Amino acid sequence: MDTDTIEVQVYSFDGKDYFLIEKIKDYLYLVNEKDSHDMMIRKEDVNDPDVLLPLDDDDEFEQALLLLTRKKIEAEE
Amino acid sequence: MADKKDDDYYYGIPDFMNRTSTARREIRPTPLAQARTHSSSGSRSRPHLDEMEEDFRRSRDHSVGGEAIRARRSTRKVSKSWIQKLKEKATSRVTIAVVSGALGIVIGASVMGIGQDYAINSQIDNLPIVQEMSQIVGENVHRTNNGEGYFYDNYEIAKEAREKIENGASPTVVLGSIAERMNEGYAQDDLDSVVNSIFDVRVGADEFVRQINPERYQDGIHGENFMNDYHDALKAMAHGEKVEANDQQMRNVYDTNHNQELDEMISEYDNVYTTSQEKGMGGK
Image 1 (cartoon, rainbow over the protein chains, first blue to last red):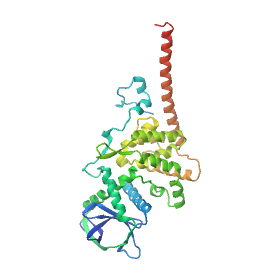
Image 2 (image 1 turned 180 degrees about the vertical axis):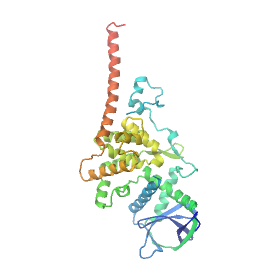
Image 3 (image 1 turned 30 degrees about the horizontal axis):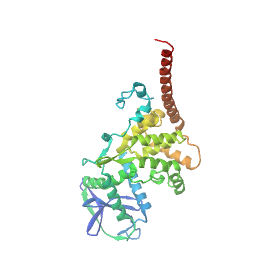
Image 4 (image 1 turned 90 degrees about the vertical axis):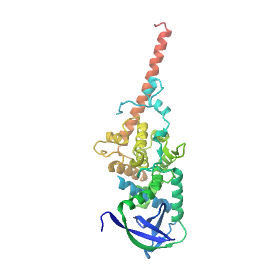
């Protein structure tokens, strides 16, 4: 494998490809290949890896966002 | 402790007032030059607040509730730098919003990495000082007049933090919670300004904690040791225990510097008053 390339997981739905840019616990952080503003957080279905489960509520969304933030801060330190 | 280098804050203020932090407080609006402005250059760009809110709202709408999505999974080889840029663009806006508190999100104990225990994390999150400090920083992030970016109101943050300390809050907890939100990657200069103002020093946040504990805080305010002590302080408070850390040393600096300022003002007043009295009694 070319050292300048990396293999990434892609989830295709609604006619778009979403790249998995991060996974923390069972949260999947996906971003549209063609639009960096189009980002979402979903949960992995342990019984079916092709299924992306929605988050339960705003609290869970904020919690997932905070986990991402913390990881980003740690990576920059 | 204070570094006596020149300070360009002191313009148009009488000399005796320049020696006091009261003068600095009076003329310390946050200048637009310090405002975070949008830039297209690199990963340190500061997104427009509207864009931040829009991205946050869109991400939230696509993430919460609704139906499960059945996707087709595959893998693809991509350039490392390209995926890194995509990741940075996608995440920087929302994480800046979180770190700055601009969107009112409280950084809870579980994210601080204090522990895996839900009960203690919940207790920490419910500590009044945790919620109050989150509010202090979050409510003092403002948009610039031209709407291009956002900035911290360092004066207000420092003022409210001082009030907390004066009312008995742990300096370690106050400093730690501000430092946790004013991340070194985005807001180190704001953090330095706030710490200098709280403690009436001119050394910046990292050097201040180093001077408090040279052995332990070599890596500064965002270093592992200070952050661990801050988290331990929160755990102690959640358990109803006394906060140790270096609270007493920090409080000594606070009291010394703020009492010194008061002493100088009183001394200056005495000099002026005594001179006036002597003249009134026929002195030349």
